Image (cartoon, rainbow, N blue to C red; front, side, top):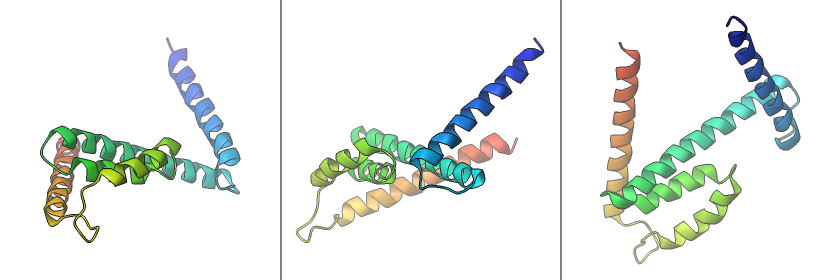
Length: 133
């Protein structure tokens, strides 16, 4: 039983080392392990945030709100790191409703702002609820 925590730590060290090596090979040619670790962390945050925004947009497709716009924002966040997101973003941008000048209608901008504000408030409340206890 006592060996299990050590095994778990060893597993995470192996995974971390493999990720850093992959970052050296596929990244922007970081010069140190710390730079590779920071770059890897930034990629993980970018992919996580993009995924959450994309999933929120997909939910807004069936709920009231600017679903296509939020999906496009999520794909734009993911696009630099995820190849399929780049290709899908082009298709989604074609389907976003626009006015005569090619801009997003005011109604969609207001709905988008409200959706973002609601998401920020809900996230803040859930974090407060989790950590304030």
